[in-house]
Image (cartoon, rainbow, N blue to C red):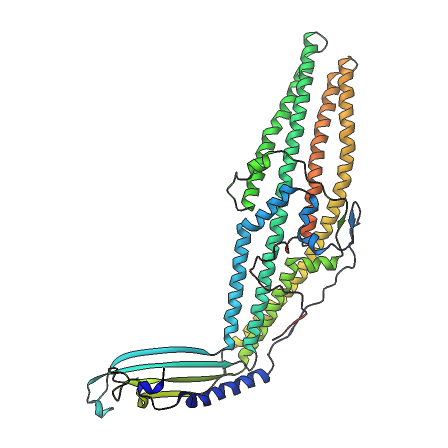
Length: 512
């Protein structure tokens, strides 16, 4: 708009020049003046063991795992169905989508904090009917009159002592912590999906073992009946074979119910209606077999990889910055405020008649610096500083506790994986021996050399060891999944979860 079209007879650039100059002068003071109050964040030093306490055997090695292998650790199991389910979990899980929304919220909150760097400008306009007293305003003669007002108000708080800078620093750290929370959700999701899948395959194996034993026990039952009819054995043998057969059959429905529950849990993890993946998993498949060698690196690498440790460290950084925000309230606040507008009693024929709203004579403005200082608040400012200091101490303790928990979880996972392999190997031997013992007992029973109780004991032992072996095979793979989770594996598998969010490392100092 050209000012002359509205009857305004002054030059806007000349008028605003002085205001703009003062804004830039104060901005220079803010940038080159006082440093931000409060402590500068320095990442705390936490004692870390140089090597794992657990014995690295049965395929475990301290070799550093590649980033790609750790990101998609499930591919080491060479199970195409599992790999496909993991991809679906990353795209469909509702908890993961909720974590993504929290990242977007944190990013927006950081933008709100950064808005404190800039001036706030508001436009306003109002109309009012007034009546003034004749004694105070003789020219009004006690009559009503209208007043129109339009204008722009601006205020800019100069961040002399760093309160805004510290708040932005805290928001940056909060955003990074929220991103790590998303990563942690992803790690837990992938581990839980894999654990549930292994549980499905383990239950299918146990059902298969039980059904095979039912078939064998049916043959034994028919044998005892035949021998009983021939007068070669007593009814006790028949009843023993009968209850053994019924007992094994009774195990199958319970296993099948657990199998359905595990499939339903997998559906929920994938964000699907229960029953969706049942058809895909109905075809029996073996329990995924771990690789011969598993690289686990050293403890320091694990702490760098784990999102929960990284999140706790960023939360500590955010809380440290909030101490500076609280301390900034101890110091005066300097602002540049200004108002420019028009005020008149006439709104008609804008730009043509005199004494109209936008006539140059109706111009009003006010600008200049403003200082405020909280002199007395009943100790509230000091108490708030103490609150933030106490919260920082809590965050520090939580960070150190998270580090210890991470190391403890990894150590336990290493031991569980290695020792379960030893247990599985012994169960393989026991199962083979039990199977041979059952065959020998049955042959000797048919030859009339032993009582049927020997056959019954041998058969029940074989069933028990076969079931334990299936459980142990599943436990070995389950413990490997838990090991990968304890090492922080999987959170880099999908890099676009936060739509380009910042990937914060362990920068020892965060300053503005």
